[in-house]
Image 1 (tube, one colour):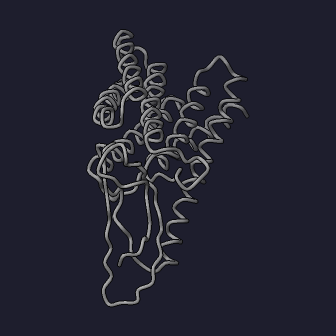
Image 2: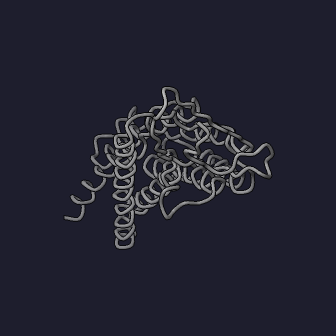
Image 3: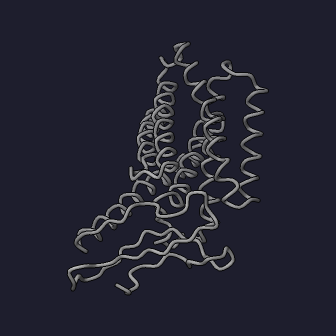
Length: 274
């Protein structure tokens, strides 16, 4: 009813005037009339997935605000646990340089934590980590590709006999080129490319996991933890990719599935160093 309830960036009719931003906001208003008109002004010159990231939620102010605050607290709590575990594993890797497990696991946790800050639902916008939208979406995309790269290195280190070294070099090169595209190009360019590269590289990881299961390499506890962890994380990654591409209202679950893998690895390390 001609009252500004919330604002994200700057709406414009030209690219130069628009300021892109995706920020979860809770706006409050009192209903004083029988009818209330909500008008949304949207413009998009920067993203292949413009528009509302999630549907509007309308209800009692206290309930909506409590739901919003709780979701942020839970997300950052889990994220913080993953990040701290990564730092701890990094220290372990400095003590035990004979094994790559601790180092790769540490890098994986740290990258997951950074990515989660800048991924949907864009909680970085309500913290000190807030960055311009273009920078944030590039960080998210690069972290996604780095996670796949770490996964490839991890799996190849465990199952070298399952795939040719030259093929892995090609996979690494493709990831490196895609990261360069993300750094140098605008989101409208790399957003259409990243999902294809992501799925292609993910299929390589799936191939190595399937080969390891087929050759019954999972009897060793160390290998079985990695196989289980990577399997559930791949399922979560595919789920989140579908959610983003189709604009679904389903929650993103990768961070929470990663936390399960983190708990398993903490259990492994605790037995290894006791």
